[in-house]
Amino acid sequence: DAKTTQPNSMESNEEEPVHLPCNHSTISGTDYIHWYRQLPSQGPEYVIHGLTSNVNNRMASLAIAEDRKSSTLILHRATLRDAAVYYCILRDLRVETSYDKVIFGPGTSLSVIP
Amino acid sequence: DTAVSQTPKYLVTQMGNDKSIKCEQNLGHDTMYWYKQDSKKFLKIMFSYNNKELIINETVPNRFSPKSPDKAHLNLHINSLELGDSAVYFCASSQFPTSGEQETQYFGPGTRLLVL
Image (tube, rainbow over all chains, first blue to last red):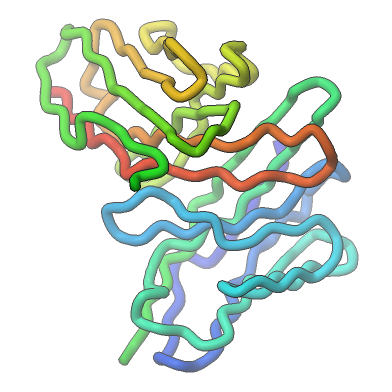
């Protein structure tokens, strides 16, 4: 199973950009890269996902390395509400065999300083 | 309106008991999941159900059994509870993709289980 590695924790100042790295050197061709975040005492919440190209949505941007062995989640302006644990996930989805496997890494705990 | 709900929110019980955790989703999704989050905050998938069929069954003890009375519900039944079962259990749902585009998972608020 392909796994991810992330820093245990990071700090950011409020209203500054945050770059959260993730390494997935054993990623396979069928793995999508997903990011979820978990606020204190809540369930995980979807942030963004991608396969090969960089992706943008209203919450964040996802930059994927050309060899796909690493990716970076970018929060353009951190707010206090962004303080959470961010999980970088590899999702192996094979529609033809109904195979869907999700592996959560340990996550990065992001602190936002006012 | 809550998209994915779980009951109870907290569950404290004695070793050896049998308990169930209920999960309901009102998103019209056809796939539901159960995850376990241990004290170190590792989140591990336990089961997923798609159209009442088990798709993934990770190496969890057979004391754990998912039961889906209909597409909107996936309950988790646990027999002979052990101390090591203490954790937070999350239910999630998604629409299983039929094309290459992946669907996101929506998580419930979690059930905090403590076995004494």
